[in-house]
Image 1 (tube, helix red, strand yellow):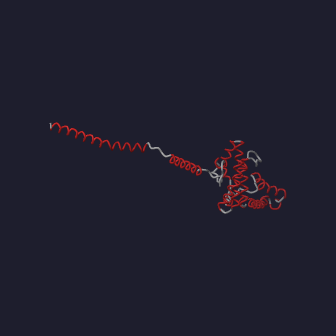
Image 2 (cartoon, one colour):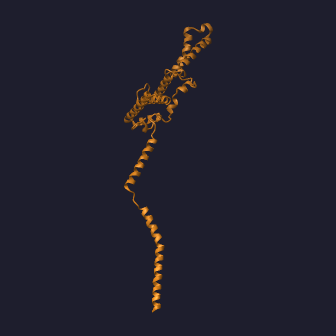
Image 3 (cartoon, one colour):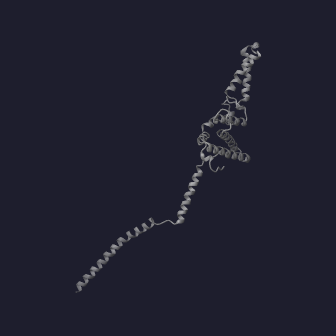
Length: 253
C-alpha cells in the first residue's frame, strides 16, 4: 500500500517537472515572437504621418528652388561667342571690329576704294607718282581705322556693337528690328551688360531696379511669343541660352 502511494507521488512529481521544463523552454520563444510582432505591425500615429509628409513636401520644394535656373545669367550658347566685352574690345586682339555699324561692304569702300578714287580725281599722282600718292592716302586710312575702331570706343559703343550683333543673329528678314526674338535678344544683351556692372557696384540700387524691369519685360515678350508660336518660342530660348522656368511663373531676383 505504501509502495503504491510512493510510486504515484513520484509519477506526479516527474510530470510536474516535465511540464515546468517545457514551459521554461517555450516561454522565451513566445516572449520574443510577441515582442517582434508588436513592433512590426504597430500603426503610426496620424500626427507622425502628417509630420513626415510635411517634411517630404518641404524637401521637394527646397530641391525645386535649388535647381531653378537664374533669370539673369543665361547658360552658354553660340550667340554669346559673337559678343564683345569692354575688356576684350580694348585688348586690341580684334582689330577688324569697327563702330557705327560698318559692315564688310562699307569697310571695303571706305578703306580700299575711296583712297584710289581720291588719287584719281584730284590728280595727286602727277607730282610724286601713284605709289607715293597712295602711300599718303593709306596713312590717312590707318588714322581713320583707329578712330572708328571698337578698341578706341567706350563701353556704350561696345554695347551698341553687341546690340547690332543680336539683331543680325535673330532677325527673321532683312531690316527686322521689332520681332519678339530680336527684342528679347537686345534685352538679353542689356541685361548681361548691366549685371556685369552691378557685380562691381553692388550698391547701385537705381540700376538694380532697371535690371528687374528688363528681366520682366523680356519674360513678357517671350510669353507673348509662346502664345503666338510655340516652336519659335523654344527656338528663341535655345538661342538665348534660357530655360522655360527662367521666364515662366514667378520671377524673383
